[in-house]
Length: 176
Image (cartoon, rainbow, N blue to C red; front, side):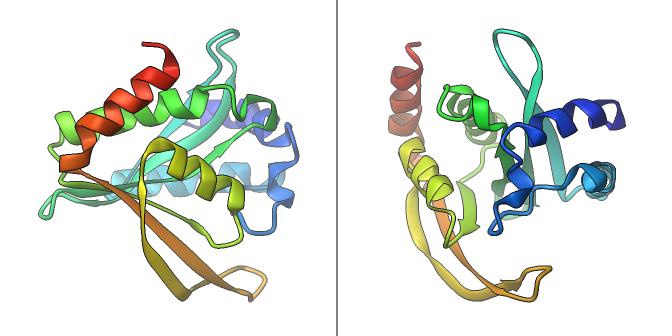
């Protein structure tokens, strides 16, 4: 909600994440528009946005979403994720993804959950692989960025038959 505006600006400012040219993390002056965009897409049924919080302080440290929801084909994408620099590699993203994946496979009965990232975003690609997702392919010249450059998008997924092993792996990583 817009109630999270100031806290999300603080989280994005932790590492000045908007400076990563291959991401679409909003600048502080664009945060309100990004929150409103996600809420509009939620109203249309094509996105379900979430904020992420630190376990120790409860402070907001990022955003993630279910997007490209396809109820007919029982697929969803987890994306538009970003995490404050000081919260990266702390387990917060792993815990968040475990919750989202559990809901997708065990409540929504998805047959596949997809992840996408920019080819140049090596950190995100590595994080997705650490979750247990497999690379499906690369969409060349897939999207045009605001600066006019073309993005190659790397597509990953976890499919229903892989979920039990992926779940055990994530629970092990988190010490559950």
